[in-house]
Structure formats: structure tokens, C-alpha cells
Amino acid sequence: MQLNQPSDDTMELIGAALKGLKEIYRSGLHYKKSGVLLMGLQRKDSAQATLFDDTDKQAKSVNMMRTLDVINKKMGKGSVTLAASGIKHRWAMRREKQSPNYTTDWFELPEVE
Image 1: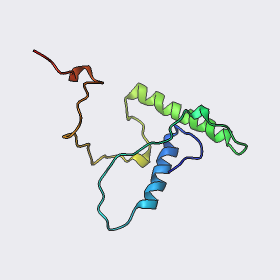
Image 2 (image 1 turned 90 degrees about the horizontal axis):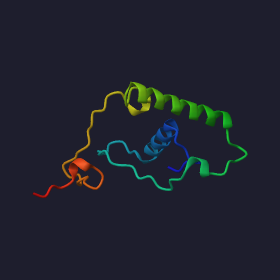
Image 3 (image 1 turned 120 degrees about the horizontal axis):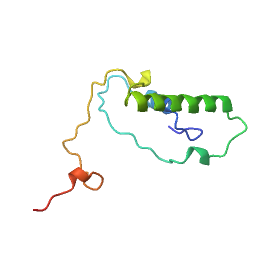
Image 4 (image 1 turned 60 degrees about the vertical axis):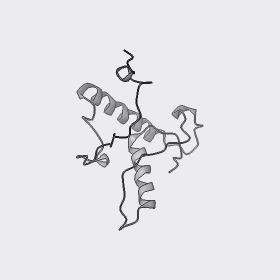
């Protein structure tokens, strides 16, 4: 799904993901959870504004996301989430084939004795 404007609004991103899911979903098929590929990433402020931009909606979005971030930082990650992300997560990542993180995690550096 392509967004009209760059966005960091979680509600807009979830909306785009749900729209994409509705387009590809076929009843009766078995599905597995997979990753998401993000392409064409750019800074939100790098896009040219248009005549039809809703500046009030954009300001409300910025305030909402900032408020969610402040609450989650103060109260703990995931204290406030969007209902579309679900309340109970019945899945967990499978990590048996995960690559080592020794390039990004000090505690996973190989030790030589």
C-alpha cells in the first residue's frame, strides 16, 4: 500500500495495512504470519506540501502520537496501544533460525579462550 504523504502516524499505517490485507485476503485459505517490507522510506518533513493537505488533521495526528509516546515512556512500553493491534497476542516470533546479533549486541560477541 502506498501512502499519499509520508507519515509516522500509527493509525494511518495500521489503516493502510488493513486496507492491503482486505485486498489480498481470500476466505478459505490458510495463512501464516510474515514480515512487512517497507520501501520508499523518507523523512516526513521532506515531502512537498499540497494545496489539499489538512493541516488541522496533521496537527492532531502529531499531538496524538506525541501523547501516546509520552504515556508509554512514562508508564512502560505498550501501556497504551491502538485497538486495531489487538489486546491479546496469540502468536510469538519463532527464533530458532535467527541470525546471531554479534554485530549489534555486545552480549552476543563471540568469546575466544
